[in-house]
Image 1: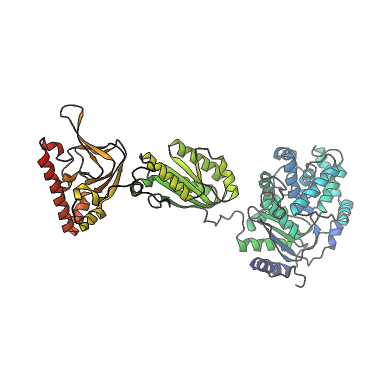
Image 2: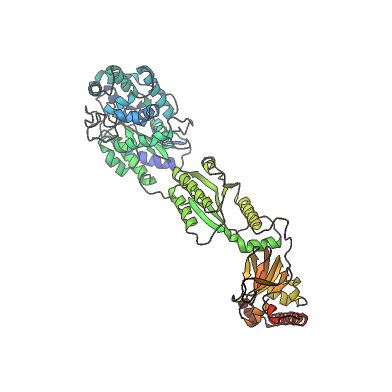
Length: 614
Ligand code: GLU
């Protein structure tokens, strides 16, 4: 183990890689490929394992010796061809069907007259002629610089291996001639095959293969250099052929056991990309009967199992999504407001709803939000989407959010957006319409919604600075403090918009009303006519509905708010409870009501019925 790489402090990831390295190194089964004579010189004991993260951290175990990339170049050159020519042009010549034939089979897909796929030699040779470049030399330059960009540094070429393969590569020439006969290659077959041999002779280490894979896993951006090597939209195509055809005749079992799209080559390299997570590079020249690195295959399987990296394993991440939904009657903005305003908000702010999302938003978490909105049994006038802690928004989430916002807006709901702190989701959300109100944090959004709500109730910021408290209510004048407090504790607040009916003739009595702010009118229907006659107006500091507390009968007048009005209301059951618990205070109130009624009786010369239940 004296040849084990770096000696710096090794953490849990290196420990894991070291363990895997030790386990697989003990295995010396397999044989070195010799059909290219130079390859036979490889040291059978060599074994290197590298893991690259998507922020460019690379962990290694074992020995990082250079070796020729061979077939591991195929998916990367395929990516370059897709980037240069587009998917359709490439598909015209190279299909994506797995084949049960060996990698160097002299065959093509007769049904479509194309090479079966870019991972077998026939497809790879054609693919290498599809990258951009006027001449074969220019095309090779594109391949060389492209592979180097995937690795993050200029890669050397092993001229000895190149010459060795050129000398013995007749089978590949035969394949190329077959491709030319099908119209998939043009004139100079030899030159084209040589370009392919040179591509196979590019030198890499396990570390390079890890970074190359991580570049695919990272949407085509090399995580070490930050370079966008190929566009994001080619990545899925490349990973698909790696997953289905990348491991020779072991591709199915590899996907089953390891579950990470990968490509192997005859020099013992494996490059495996787990999208959105990491890249793996493995190297050990001893090959199994499928032509895959014996240690590479076992190491990948061990790592995949220990880290739960199978691509098709359902995600375990649950922290993303809808964190909570709350209403502004429960959580208020920090803005200090006058008592009268607070009283309105106490009652009405449940119409402001905040949905707080966290983490990476995808289909599942957005569906959860949609359900929370659509299944909400309580109406909302304002919905704030608090996306401050959202770290990513994928395509599905972006499309669904847009359509949710459109639907809410069409339904007359005002949509607020708390902008994410992170760049990617912030940029994605620029697509939302201008009708969406944007805020830096939830508090600012709440404050704005509250102010809008107050305005919709006719309350401007400078209005209704005070609400006439119970202690200052005419009806309770002279009552001892303890009684006022006892009544106050049992009152609720009711906000009535201008023009709204507080209660109507014949309604069940629902309490004694103290007008805190605003003004109401009492009126009755004129017998045998459709009109109404106003009996009185009642403004802040006065009360109405006393009789209901005393006799429990139905209302004999209608009460309409003439302007935005706020009332303190003592409901019949609250009054009953007061009588039970605090008979002294209840007695004071009954006395106060009697005093008020008798005063009104004395001053009345008109019909008693007109104010019997005013
Ligand atoms: N240059 C090699 C060939 O075409 C690559 C084979 C491989 O790695 O699968 O034979």
